[in-house]
Length: 435
Image (tube, one colour):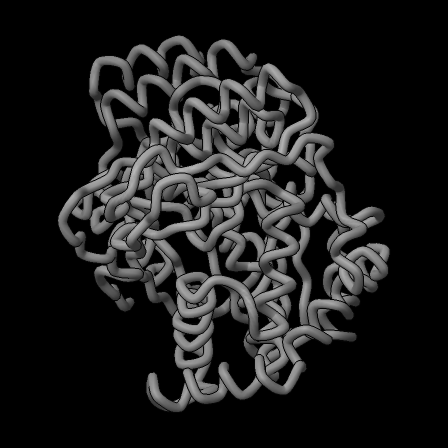
């Protein structure tokens, strides 16, 4: 077989065999197929798509490109959750310790930012010393000891995704449903979780812009997980405005800490409770939605979720002084509240534009290897449907460069639109899809 023949076949819309997919994935991770050919193949998949069988073959080829964890010697049932990526999505920072505090082991292998979407690893690395490179032995030891792990993807687990994930980010191929299914589900299969809740974002700040596309992605992932014996539920949630108020790594960590102390934005807190409840039900920790929500709320109120988060940070080498006193976290040198240009009801907040503004401020990557400025970001002060008064702070920019601040101000201002008449608020969730 030759890589060029496989690229040509996919470019022409011809279904690849299992052997061809495995050959290409193995060749890429072993350095026999270079980045430029992998980029061409990614674009061919993006443009031509994949059949259900091709997606299945791709996911398993990526999952078994390295080690596959067996966590049965640590816990009889391990639960995980995954978001398809959004703006202001710091849900894992709250939900993982909350569910672990309810007595369910949570092992989450998470990623960095893609495009305008922030990554959990980047957020956690705002905490000095926090390790996101645990190996298999360290992951299992920590899971056994404290019941929770939030770490980055290791070179041993789904290494094909580790390489392709980074390449997708800089080749405009992030939004492909087959590539998203392969990326997410290969990590989930390799990481050893038994029950998985998927948070599939839909809207202008998500990779899936329409409900139809989000449903197609959710159904494909639920089917893929069910086929390999995982308990699966997918929630389709709104991303037509940022989730919560904070967008930017250290700012989002602070917001998650506030939420673990029963503060934080109402929409973000409610979103976390719903996702946590689904994880509790899927793992038989609660029999119905009401019981699951009650358990999640009681656990949050007791402080157990906060203590579990603190235990996790300490176990992974993080300096707990920075979460006990969040004002210690990286702070931008330039902080500018931007007044509302007019009064009216907030009609829309383009989440993608806000995410792009944060990337341009330095809070994300425009090319492979770009450093991250954890201190920069944007705080939005209103939600769609809120009544805004002229000259009150509409949003606040955190920057370290005057020119970048000016550019971000213009972009984020343009992302807000107003109405003279009342506007309906956006729902948090649209649909639930069970395996």
